Image (cartoon, rainbow, N blue to C red; front, top):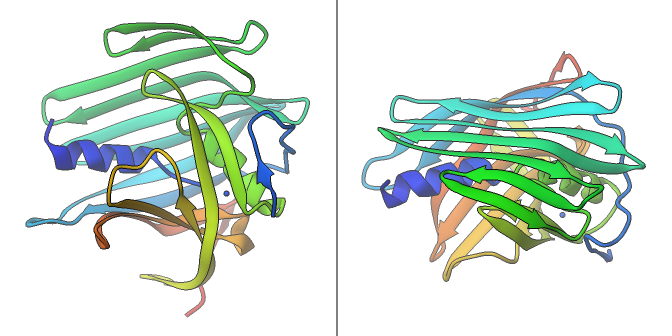
Length: 249
């Protein structure tokens, strides 16, 4: 797998967010979840710009049961990442996480199950078996985004979460870094700029633009190296709780 294809897949998987500091050991308040479907465009800038399209969606599958899904299907790159989770005692708890990616003829997959009573995660990452205990709460590599959205809505400007990425838990931290009236192809919207502050490479910066008026939905993601944008993901259309959202012109 080339560097740019690996980076673009990581970028697509890396959506979302973050006063006081809220750590993963504290009770995390759960706000009302709202189903949505967002159409996305992802671009990798370079000598030749590479782009693909996809969808990010949240839907209710039963009482206190939800499904969060990111999917793209380009000619050279395809990605399907999803989690089934439940809301229990005001906590978002992942039950099952699945990841599949294809870059040309190279494929990767992850299948993980979370046992929150035993505090154990089991499954596989490619050919490696996973069977690890964890400190609660632990979030999966896509569902943690919803928890981060909720912390923003609760007024927190910094957050730390324990997230199972790759083959082990990682402590991830974010902060509110600013605000911007973000211009999109379909109009403008007021956003907060969220900066990732841990798990970064040297000279790398990762930012997420979230819209407070839309429940702190992620609207744009950018990865920068030495001050230059390398990858970008942005929402091109949004249906929130069955209603199509129009942006200000």
